[in-house]
Image (cartoon, rainbow, N blue to C red; front, side, top):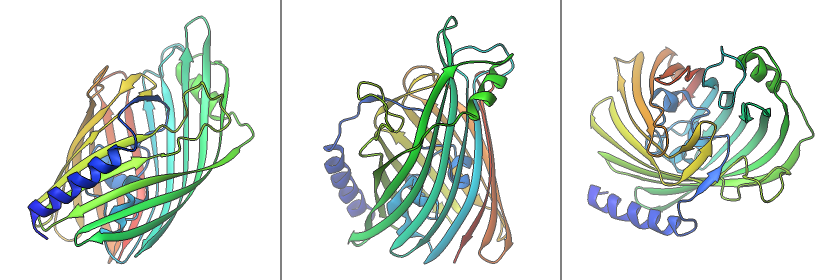
Length: 329
């Protein structure tokens, strides 16, 4: 399929999808950059790259562009803000776990996402924890040569709990908040993705959390899972080299302020047993909060890789770490 035709088709599909919801501001704590070691090693520039089992999270349509069978089991951790000082509004602590299996034309996945944050004011500081279990079924459909659409249907069980913050430091308060539990609410949601590919260019679009469930929150409060739309471009100028860029199409209200992220990254094969990647992301609104990421993959046997990543921000103590096992055949 020619590059020009891929571009025209992708633009038309994306324009149609964006008609479902205009870019808008919404509040939440959970974000794209929660799981997927290859994606996080590229700082999140992955929507058009997604070709392994983590595509069930990053771009459901990408599951159809990899091998016939894939799997990933991974965990990641992140922190935002200064955790060593006294408790104050802004810092957060999170984790994301993903187990995903993919084969044409279906994928199944399980995810656990938790974020604890400190908010409110200095006089009335509160600690909040969001914990969501996700069971996903990904379905793919080819609509044109080189163009695939996919959707991840999600059964969600989660809770949101808030209490006055306690602890000698922000880190202590967040650790205590992470232990909070409450009754889970069960609901459902879905993600939608499009992937257009040619020999040189890949264009991806992901629309997450179409229903934006509230998990029992009052309807006038911002939901924990906002609608998020992201567009991605990737090129493969040489064997083993991928360059990518992602752009959020709407703004979300996160701990630390409004954010609409952009990311650029790359991935390169270092022989047949190792690959490396790096990237940077920043916000186009509010505080830029730039974060630089690096990642490495080592092949332990045919079709089996160990992936890891580390990311560090320039503001306060923002950082991420993660590790995953990935298989593909």
